[in-house]
Length: 124
Image 1 (cartoon, rainbow, N blue to C red):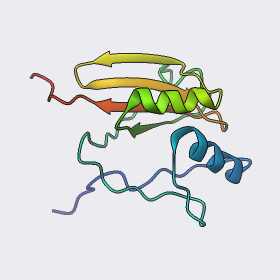
Image 2: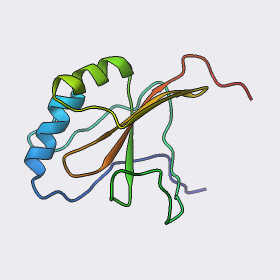
Image 3: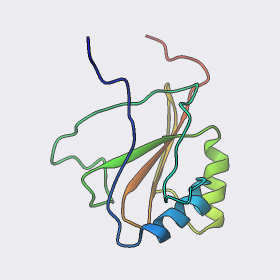
């Protein structure tokens, strides 16, 4: 049966794509290629979610964008320290059974969700 296997990419418009790419390189450690993007190997932990939200959700706030991007990270505290060194503070943090989360807003106004998956699988 033909089916989708996972997220193949995130593509969005930005007024200054080079500046947004430079921010992601500085703040989140992206290795931006000459073509302006990044290709990630599939992580060995976590997974990719696809989930529509209600039009009146507040979950993406304080961003006004109609979408949010989730990135799996290997060291949430380390990524947040790198962001803080660039003057970027999280808009929130949360720990739960499936892992640790924090949120940032990028220069294009997009909410970025950082997820460090739990080392132990969540209990059913």
